[in-house]
Length: 184
Image (cartoon, rainbow, N blue to C red; front, side):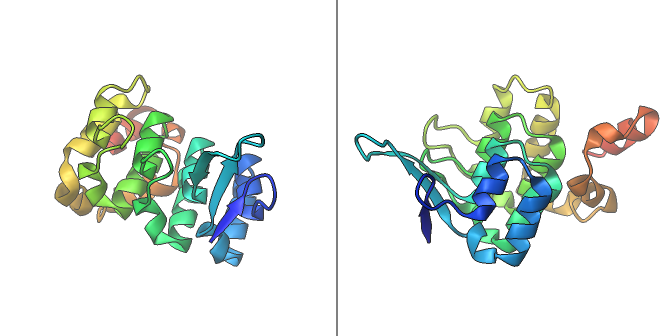
């Protein structure tokens, strides 16, 4: 399924653009087909494709929190394996947009094999992108991505890792925060 951003955008996509994360979760859970609908935008004059992406890609571009990302993946699990028009997986977009560590954790848990997939625009794996990232979360990205898919899968069976999927790690203060983050 496909929708034009200017002619007939889905309500899910509009909620993403507005950063209405509760609205995004509601739409995704109640209108699951919208989570599977590719959104495209064309140049009005030339009708050439400007961009094409799934709601998961769009949510990451707009800085969605981990619980929203998780809800979108739960509604359409193949989205985490899909490349946008630029040849980027959701993990590539998340690293490029300096996503919170909890978002990276959700993406890795959902598709551990993403570690070997290169971005088509720059030829880099997620680890290589993290290495060159200027994000304040760079060290977390490198630790999480370096562990590899098998190790990361084992880590996500840990309740503390699962906890981080839905909680912004900045909410942890002092020693508790350090203890939780050191597990990665």
